Image (cartoon, rainbow, N blue to C red; front, side):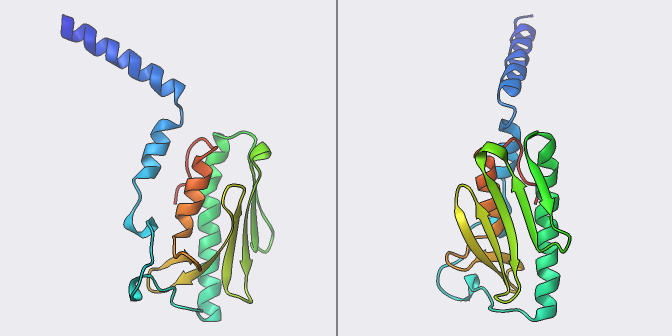
Length: 163
């Protein structure tokens, strides 16, 4: 009898905590990242960007990245009513307006073969596609682009991007 009462009490506390911290479970899920989204870099060939990719490859990879960014953020709009996500007709730029928190801008630079990401928290970062790692890495610190986007959005959003 006592065990049943304790279990029921614990369930009640869990429900209450879950309601009070609506973001907790989504934040915990975001913390379990794959090795590909962790820091890259250091010496040796493991963290090298791979340099410029061919024009055809760049077009393919950058389109895939922009689609991935849009699809990852779009489900968050339901949880964050003030957010507005737009993609221009040519898919060269995605804009996330978070209202009071500022803008996230994702822009393609075809001349430099880079993807620019600007967030209100981290500022502007440039990413190049690494053919070796099959991901977009910061040109300065070799961090995966998805990590920056996820980390910055988690600081003031409900839910997390679904990369």
